[in-house]
Picture (cartoon, rainbow, N blue to C red):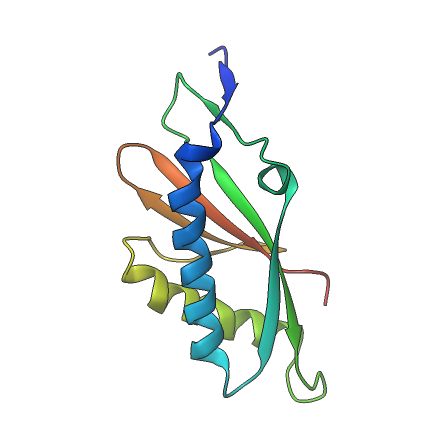
Length: 126
């Protein structure tokens, strides 16, 4: 199948980006007893160059870097990732997102509506 990518207008993504950042802030509150973290948007969304395939329902995604601040003697990278995954699942559920998927270097939340809209939360190499 031939892909038909086009740029998404900033107006179309503004509300979704705001929602995703609200989720991240709520996750910050959720994990605050264990550790804190900073986040920043990166990738194509940082440059307002988000694309989508108009011939499919794959939607578009937002990539964020998450930088935890904690005592790494008490919290292994695996433990940090597990705590974050559980918090994103808990908070994301309130916004209609599915289970938080855990891959090697990323946690991914997906929301199914008119199309598939992905919020992808990338963890740095810990």
